[in-house]
Image (tube, rainbow, N blue to C red; front, side, top):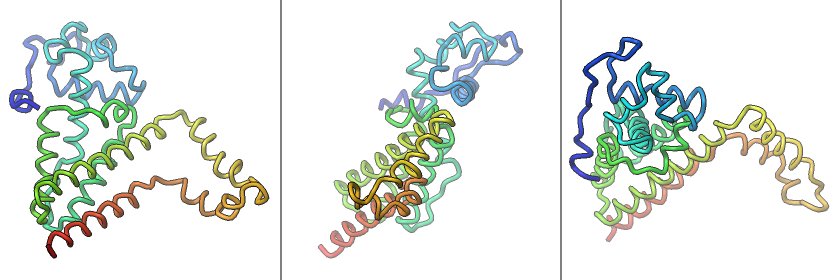
Length: 236
């Protein structure tokens, strides 16, 4: 990340569009999120954005170098929304749990955009603030530098990988989601014990478990591992 990229401010169009609005980076990003929510990630094109904004598609290049640059801005906006209003409570486990859930739920609220956002490094202000906040929680808890960075990496990648997988599932057509549900509830639950004894024995538990995301449990496993590491550091 470069300092100029993080600190870059909004640029504005001097004349209103055909719809009477003044273009801004914030308006374009908000419109991009709406288009992806309605039409999927494939809607992120200059032509579609221009039509939705009532502006010539070439006007978008005054604000973004291209659609990839816009995708980074969308990713950074999702991070900003996830962290909006967050304040550390002073309990590192509670703070990380809150941040993890915010990140996960923030991406899941925009599943189509999450497909483009979860694996990107934006180099923008919201991401920089998020990195600073998470490292602050870990360092404040007493993790040494190397462990703080390692657990930062684990924490973020865990939240984003679960968000990406669950967002991809949520973005499927309803028929596809229903078909997957039936696989667990009918196909796998109906396998005979003679050929699949373990699945037959666990059929009821599998049906209940596979309805939901395992991220909340995975987050607690991460926190337990981090606490064990911190306890070892303190004993040492």
